[in-house]
Image (cartoon, rainbow, N blue to C red; front, side, top):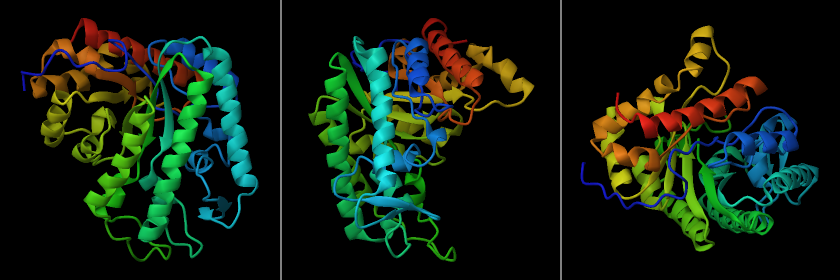
Length: 349
């Protein structure tokens, strides 16, 4: 795969690093200031799930849905008749996050990433009134997918108005997509499994969203840090970049990744530990060259020019940082930046 064009243009500077999305704590102002300071090449809108209902990944995006109200039940989010306090809380929390981002990035010019949960992860997580997952009902999936596109586009428009100098990247988080495709999601009783959803239908729903995002001038991307991420499907659906956990990639993924890179698809590869671990891991955090070794090994296997590596690949933590201490979260971003520079300056060892 050595004949990759050197003219691929990715929507970030060479040797960029970014975060996946979530951040520890409950203070959006502090989170925005830290992320913008630590990630000057490619900052992102921090998510703070420690604030509780409405700040979680599902509730955060459910608050964007149009004419599809949900509420929290003991078992999780569920479709309801009218919007209530849970959605109002989600909307208020998002507004606080955007206010903080606007204050600290009002004069920012460059790429900036925002994150939303994808339609398949939402339908796998939100319950119908019957208690079954929405993914079990094709009509409910269709309604949510339409509402989701409308809500995401309104969100992109709002961020664009607040930060007119930013080039928005819209990361669609689909951690449950592999389970949707494999048919391993349990039914409400726990004794059965929901059937696998047809891959053509999955690709159609994703493609509609990615096309709509691109039509706004934003850059659509997909993130899946679960084992078995459907790399080919996400690329074919129109994602311009793929966020993946580097340590979960195997040689079986090499051909799909090579095709993606040759097609100009960017990669956001997670290598930095997302939580505080033992002393050995802490020591490893101080060695950015070791942190990005899996990325360099992958690139060597693909046989693609090392000159393309620091342009095509963005370094990230392996997943969100909500479970980390504030000190570890900050260090994770510092290490990701240092790792990106290693990929530029020492692409081969």
